[in-house]
Amino acid sequence: MESDLERARELLEKLSNAHGVSGFEDDVREVLRSELEEYVDEIKIDSLGNLFCVKNGGELEIMVASHIDEIGMIVKYIDDKGFIRVSTLGGWFDQTALNQRVVLHGEKGRVYGVLGCKPPHLMKDDERKKVIQIRDMFVDIGASSKDEVVEMGINVGTPITVDREFRVLNKSRVTGKAFDNRAGVAMMVEAIRQTNSSATIYAVGTVQEEVGLKGARISAYAIEPDVAIATDVCVSADFPGAESSYMDVKLGSGPAITVVDASGRGLIASKKIIDWLKTTAQRFEIPYQMEVADGGTTDATAIHLTKAGIPSGVVSVPARYIHTPVEVLDLSDLVNGSRLVARSLETAKEYFIPKNTK
Image (cartoon, rainbow, N blue to C red):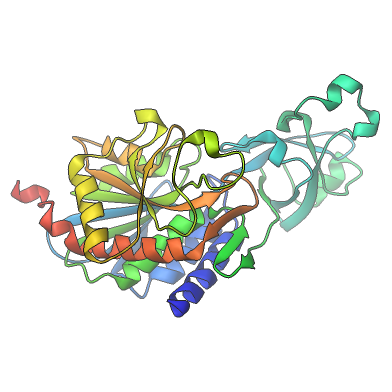
């Protein structure tokens, strides 16, 4: 287990430290390609940027989808004094963005800046009581004019990510940016490396999940698999203030199998999917948790509604502080999630039949 944890840590660190907001996933896609190219038979990229890693096998076709984008921002306006206004890409809780250091991925390379706002010393009493929204913040890159910003390679449309690096907290607990969904990507990579499935497997690094599940929608349409698993993260409810969520998902207790997310507006997993994943976990003595969530959804929502419908499930790594730059998870959940996905790819033939034999 110790070597498994170390391998998971190294992989997650590499993925978390890579940068790739929705629509600009190039660097993350290259990391994923390099990690899987020795374990698959074919790699291709579609018109939207989804990465397909295909492991040839029998007639049963299984899709494993893991989105490679992270939430971020994009330059929308540069004022005459060199301050930059942004639009968000993905779901931000605005107060977590203030005073973060950021990376602007410009035409001449990376430029570093900070997200600032009017200081409290200059605010009126009623202003101090309000949550500052991202639209009222600005990025300061140390420039004195708009011309200087442009000279540094920054223009309208430049993508922005948070400047945070992976760190170990204590034992198997780690923190970093973009664990949503680099933890899911790491879980998919390790599962593909480990599995002895006889099926044909499509491991897909999907793009633009955070802005509408776009990559999953078109990649599932292209593949039309017999069954699909999305690997992602889910909310861990084991920290102060989370008691009212009435969820029992916690760090270190195993990957979560989703029954329902987004209060049913997203995925309602079928009984066959739940039986498949739960029975596999029990057979191979893999710890797991069950998730029913009021908010948030995954690529599985788009996949299961593709064409005539594709049976789809979700295996997630529980994480604290999702959609912030300081997400926290337990590597043991990632390791056990990889095992669950790997073994499920092997047992899928007991539950599903190829579409061309139906």
